[in-house]
Image (cartoon, rainbow, N blue to C red):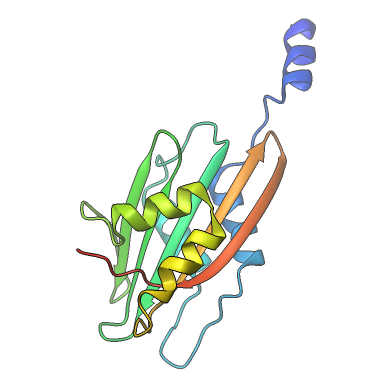
Amino acid sequence: MLYFVFICTLSGCSHLSIGKISYLVGKKQDDKIGSLKQSTFYEVRKQLFDKYPSIFSGRIDTVYFMEKYEIEDASYYGIIWTKTDTVSYSLFANNIKLDTKKPFTDKAISLISTWDIITIRNEERKYPNSSIIVYVARANVAGNKYQIDTLKMKDLIFER
């Protein structure tokens, strides 16, 4: 038994939950409540994890968050992914649900997965009329240590 505890201590058996990672991302994001936007993205994610506690229940090494708020229908849309899992969700009229359709294109998700900021900014320039701001975060996790990078960008409306 002592041997197992020692091995776990050395190998980092403890890990951050998706809820804790989401909280840390929320602290780093410049996401504010406004006159129309009634919740932060962290609050929306908290509703998601409260309603669906089994999503992302395993060990996470890198997780990506991509989220937007659309004023036209007062809805929140997001996608969270790791190497092995992807969850798309939406919140409308205080009802959070999992979605089968991704709220962003595969190309946009792929760009975020590479975290190539120069290419992302170059793609943004192709859509000067896009008024929707997308909040993006990448969290690299090793045991209880983490690094969080955040980015605000225009919605890259390729083809949907």
